[in-house]
Amino acid sequence: MFNFKTSIVKHTFIRLFSVGLLILIWAFAATFTADVQTLPGPALVFNFLIQEIYSGELSLHLGATLFRVVCAFIIAMTFGTALGLLMGIHKKSDRWLDSWLIVLLNLPALVTIVLCYLWIGLTEVAAITAIAINKIPMISVMIREGAKAFDKQLDAMGKVFVVSKRTHFIHILLPQLTPQIAAASRSGLALIWKIVLVVEFLGRPNGIGFQIHLGFQLFDITMVMAYALAFIIVMLIIELVLIQPFERYVNRWRAV
Amino acid sequence: MIEIDIKGKSYGSDAVLGPIKMKILPKTTLALLGPSGVGKSTFLRIICGLDHAFSGSIINNAKTSMVFQEPTLLPWRTALQNITLISGANEETAIAVLEELGLASKQDQFPNQLSVGQQRRLSLARAFAANPQFLIMDEPFTSLDKSLVDEMLKLTKKLIKTREVTTLFVTHSQREAEYLSDEIFELSGNPATLVKQKP
Picture 1: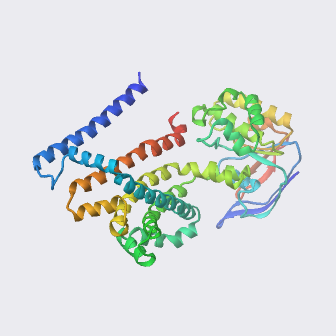
Picture 2: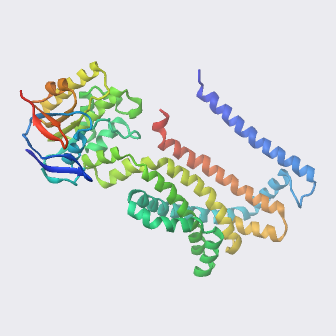
């Protein structure tokens, strides 16, 4: 018989074992290279991380990066979802905007960042705008494909029963987009934080990207790895504590 | 009273419906028979107000609700929410209707936790919870076995009678039509027109 608790324990064990294995490979590789300027071992990187936590540096830079990630994520999800919905529901809008979307999808992130800094200046607004512009097209494409597959029967049912526009949107349309929204959120967060680092690398006075830039200039690989690791851990926590439980909640009807 | 005066309906050069004129008197139940593909769904879409691209007119000021061929439920909402959100009925009314249809114990379950028969009953419950003056039923008993059809027919007849709802019942079963309706019409021909069956 299937035992849910045993299954969870087993999965958690496999996950932890897998992470442990990765750290072990890293430690072996560091021992093998035997050069902290090339590949510092896990102990050295974690020690550096702890020092940065105590000095308050990590929270300062982590906070700045998180702020940019959250702002850009909210803006990109809002505009991307709205645009995707419009294009998915109205064929005319799709025909008009499709070429624009292709242009934006193929615009390199670096070009958008440089242009935003040149047009708006080296400001927080420019940084967040650049990140959001990079992500909006991808979210729009995902949502558009979901909206194109809306169930016409449910739509007709809503019209026959004359449900309000609000109810129609929240209870009939939006739940059909849950898989696309979840995928866009997950890939969005992963992509956004990578772009944030480039944005910070190029033109911000704080943040993980700025610290990585500093580490690059000082040729301090321990610093580069420690800051990258710190943010990876934070993003993993966000995934485990926020995204996955939210996804489980909205998809609870599928699980029964 | 619902007045239907369709002069014609075409999809491109393909005429689907010919002239159809009928009046549905209050509190009567009309059955509409016809083979698959004759244009029953098109006819219903016009009456429901889902299709406006036809020549003619429909006068329907009655509060309308519908039981679809498939249950057409929101799979991500519970049985109770499927009624309250869509029909606009309050929780008390929705629970009363669920009880009437033998689904009281299922109110917190999602549609995919219900059997096909229970899903059909939920669809029926939603339609009646809206407290309609005009009810349209589009082959609501398709794909059910005979005993379940009989049970649903009995239940539907009782609900229509107690609530005095004007009903248009679309089916391809003469037996179902005779059991439930006061008058039977047939949709036939190409383009389809309406013929009243002799009593």
